[in-house]
Image (cartoon, rainbow, N blue to C red; front, side, top):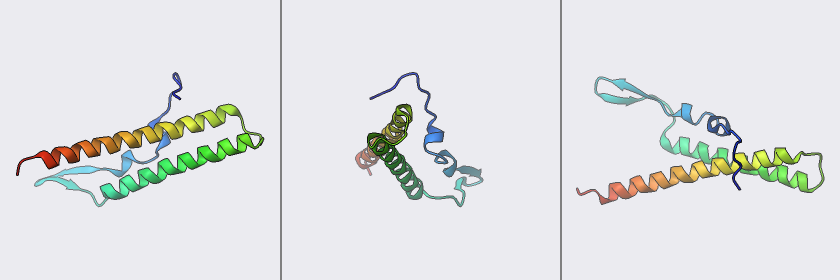
Length: 107
């Protein structure tokens, strides 16, 4: 289910993910700041996506139970969760492709 014409800002959907990865140049090449590592960033991304999916499920349950929830709110939250999941799957696919490339490199 894809809604066209609805601008969804990924940086709003998954807050702070882009700010967590920073690199500063140094004399010896690239120096990583004392920031969270990839594992922590990816873990935060997973938690964000899971949170969005849980919020969407709760809103859907409330709507189905007859609580005063507007249908458009339910659809927007479901779409946000869907876009976040699509982003997560794309990141996973890129990681698997990169890993496959590394494995195929001759030593």
